[in-house]
Length: 157
Image (cartoon, rainbow, N blue to C red; front, side, top):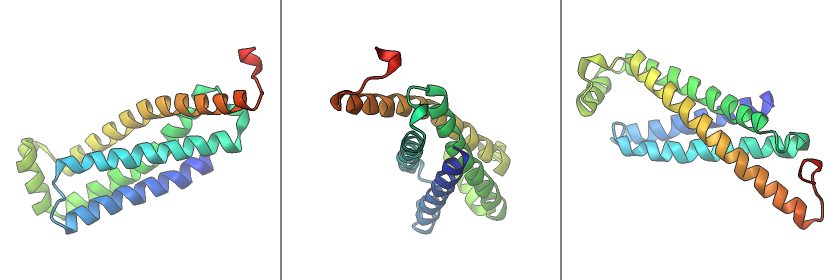
């Protein structure tokens, strides 16, 4: 479980960093709407990680805790690494921090640490909610394919 989470957490972090750096280079670093792209990446990575867990450990099927834990590990690793990256980036780039402070209305209260904390809270929230929903979707898909193959689960008989 943890090797899957670590692998996909690093992929998630790399994707977030790539989206951020490309948008920054293109002058869109402060574009708030790019968070939707981050969300699509986040949900996609969680789906793949939970699906991989179910494929490698079929006994975890219908155990929502294992699916949610997989998603939380994966999302947590990527989010914490990205949070650290953003804190360092904003600390080393005060002009960019000032443009975000101006655009968001937080003013001087927005510090690199506060920005990192906001990223962490958002990442944990998305990971928790999306992991639960995706676990349900994946488990339902597995159960449906098993029923079509004529197999049933003891918990459902």
